[in-house]
Length: 302
Image (cartoon, rainbow, N blue to C red; front, side, top):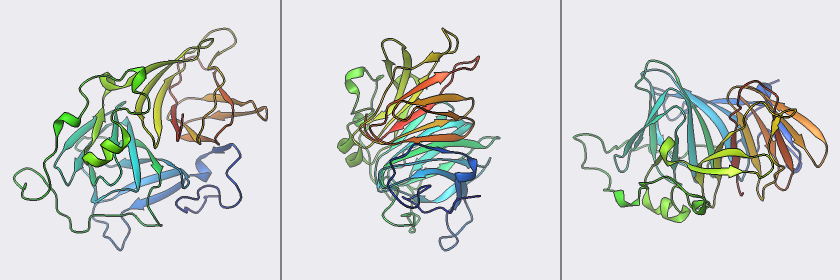
């Protein structure tokens, strides 16, 4: 049975959010942006897994040749990870335009207005993570004026300082301020594109090392792609871990087994599913498959 979408309270509808929950397809809540009262000439379809007052996890798709409009913005930082296709994003206030390809990320700090375009021949599919709040109530803040700084229409908007954009890959000491320190990014009104060569790479674990590729790590949220190899003694696994904030583990394709140490429960996350793990919960990931698994790990705090 499909769950009704209540932003900042999904899929939990009552009681504390202190239990691990596997969010399968029957719990995912779809919604179309924009809403009829705004106008629906250019729309996308989104699928919400988790939406709390601390963060939101979702994915959405844009059809070939289409876009979503009007520009929207959020009461938190939003991070994209393109799963399929190429998504071109326009910052309507600065004119900054970025094409984000499969396997790449994009940080859009709080309040940054954006429109997404698909200039390709296949649908784009993008995972989206946002913290702390998606918006203040149950409706998207949108730019209803509709002004955009684009080619030969530059009388609107503001210039931007390219020196604020990173020109190198991240290093471990950048954790907590990658690709930009949180407050500085929000003041810049810029997009921060994170292609493969600008991800922050880190080895996670000592006894069971895995590769972590951080897209974003700041005071609002952390998003990393994990490379969990296959093979090994029984299975490849991670070291046990827990976080100071809530965590969402998303699987685009494959199967990931998760052991919750506190309760001795086992969950399996499959294609387009999310496992919600409350803060301070100790868990361990296992790969029993024949291929490496690539979960996306989003945490409010490390």
